[in-house]
Length: 255
Image (cartoon, rainbow, N blue to C red):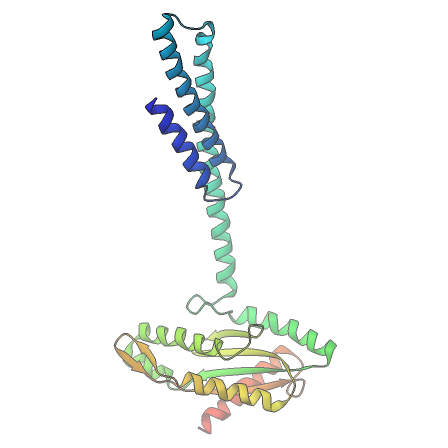
């Protein structure tokens, strides 16, 4: 009777708590537990019948084979569950590797290759629709001094905070990428007027100046931004990025 309750509850719990919907292994184990629990209740009933009648039904001799089948089913289910877990872990690892190949590990932003891929697609779309778009090249001011004086861990926290600040200034459909070091690039599609790009850049500069709390420190950063417009400043990714980079250095030199 105790075994019947235990296996029935265990089967119900596994059935309700399957971590992966459609997992065949957990389904087999759950069903086998429930069937085995019912079988234990049946044995309890046979015991009561034996006490009352003094004999056992004729089919009792074949119940051992049924038990072997159910227990084998449990083993198959457990083995299937292990194989499914291995397959799920491999798929997750593959997805993580794919994500890291195109995203920055520190900030989670797209990296240089993914940014260029999206820029190529955006250029094609802008060419077909005769729309303007803007490429921003952003560089943090005096970041090397901060990194050298306070350490790389603090510098990493600053980069992560700045990435979040920049993300809050643009639309969901726009692309922000960490181009390398303390450099970020932005792809702003569908710019109607040149002034719109300037307003977005000004908003980013003001947001980046908001103090960042790293541990007990309150750090203030600033940035320089260069802008290149498509098709005014180039019609291919390399030219647009190079001109935005040049404009950023001119902005940095001009203070």
